[in-house]
Length: 130
Image (tube, rainbow, N blue to C red):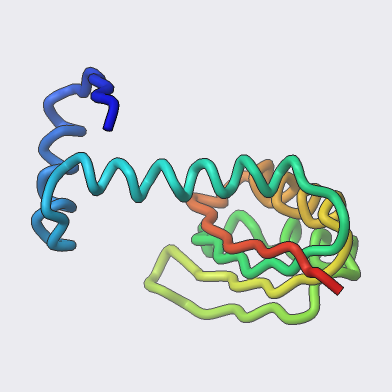
């Protein structure tokens, strides 16, 4: 394998070490490889066209996102299911299941990323081969 070095600030390195230990990775390199695979998968999906399926979770601020999320939900007919759950006093978790043209699903993801109060987004996408 090729060795690639990178610089991290002390706080990020400390957090990385905690994750490596908590998740039981044999090394920091293995943790980075897993993170990079996810990063590459997401970037590859963004290049795809055709039909896709998507499961997306978003951690959102309870107060600031209601109207924006409702608008997005109604704008994208590709959303098949949406689940809303309260996490704590300030946060909610939104889970979306969507299916349709990859371009529309990419628009959906980008729309959510632009909503003020969306704190984190994670998604799984697959190309639908019919």
